[in-house]
Image (spheres, rainbow, N blue to C red):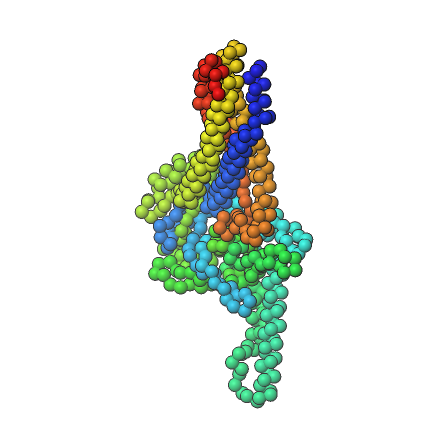
Length: 507
């Protein structure tokens, strides 16, 4: 009983112990916050990369691709059909995106990916990334999504995109007609027979051009939000808003190279939807195009002797029923797809460098933060040694009254455990509270400092992702309490070894 009474008295009256509690609290809270942010970052990044790439990717080593997508998919189903829930063929190549904004052309290097949207949605959450399937902001209010999530994605324009395109076509028609009238007026005033070099259309061609603008291009694209938008500060409200340079229904120009002997290839495409995965690396780089147009432009359509045609592809994406079967499926596919022509990888192997970097960074941070708690342990060690020296006579009195060495030792061990429990408990509560409101805290810090702490262009995400693992929280708390108890062992042994006579004679 006297042991508990002494522990409570030391906790209430020894304010120097507060320093140990604070150091343990800060160490535990910091470890919980950092682990939660790193786990959230890793989890979100893995989910989004996996959604873009699917579970397994079969890539051709040449950008020219390999012919006959149907045969490739049939082989995949034959080898591993029982493990597969979805397959899609794609064509991937580098390109250049060009569009007009503010009276000038803007150019962006992009990764052009030819897809069939229906089969692509079977291997990844394509619908979750297309803006027409979600609430769209429009001024202070919002309108309902134009597509239902149960609706399969396609290359058809939404009603608002078609209306926008019609509006642009009407404006072009009016502009061309005005230029034509201005041309006739100039001819009448100057009596010059030669046509104006700026406008040479006939009335019929004016109507043809306007009508052509109303018809979408054969090329259709889902374009990354980061390619066609930029943040701008509203001077009136002093808030940031996103300005879109291209809207669904507008036309863009795309440049790439043909298969075989590389030659420049160009085509116009109509923007059907805006793609936004939440990772700026993809949103500012990817352009999804209808695969038929891309194959035609790149001259990847080949005629067979029987009169039919085959279309070349550069990759096949596979979605598994259970990702735990990934290594088994990869081995099956590698037995049929020769390594000199194809590269068969899981999405983790394809993005191994990025994932390994995140894991190494997380491990190093955990080691460094664990050292913070270890420093708190050395503080407890020093404080306890000081208490033993200061309370030497009191320890002698206890032992003279019949307290055993084990009893004296247990006082200091219990005291260390109490410090660890209080510090860990407060640290866990503080850490979890910080994680809960971390984005609000980031906003306040950004407001005070005038700069963003978590820039989405650097860290990929719009807000700080977090994921609290209960087991990690438990192990951090248990580790802190263990360090506190271990740090109190040496002072406790010294106190237990004191002889009553010598302790009572201590000055």
